[in-house]
Length: 214
Image (cartoon, rainbow, N blue to C red; front, side, top):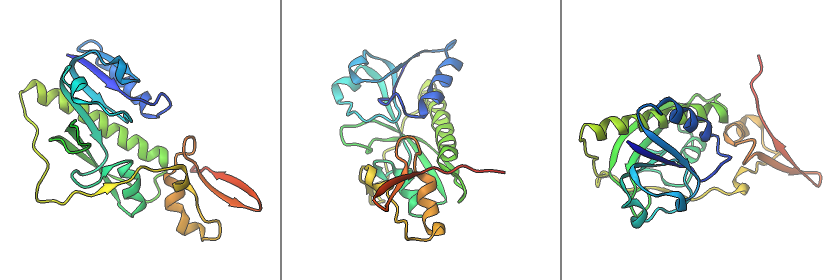
């Protein structure tokens, strides 16, 4: 198959997983990793992985399937950074949905889902590993399903969709006067490189990073 992976952020940590996935399947498929929709020339499958660009119908028509990896149990959790919002709300696990891309974001038919538990002590990088492993599993599942002529299932009309807004840097701010135990869940989920937890105190702004020690 001719497969394209579109991840619009070169600094996103998922890129390391995507490169390994591409290398391990290079003997069976022709796979390219792109950064911008202008690079999308066509093929069998287009995977949108942490893609911040809108891929319209004209671009999608160049591929047999345009598939999105979305970290929520759709139709719940449409929108931005759903697994982070859900874990901040107290969720103890994440479901990743593999769906067909449509003009209306996160509304396409579902090919497959993959769930995993998230421990209360899991830090951002540990959550990432679980998430990216689930995404790669779903990508392999997509290849298998398509090869066998399977079809996706429309999202349930019996469930009222929910939506998350796009996160901003201000969402990583914490209140330094709150107990650390109350702040831990928020601090542990913030990306220390791209969106670090921070607080303002004594006229300065400080960032926080966590790591486990033995």
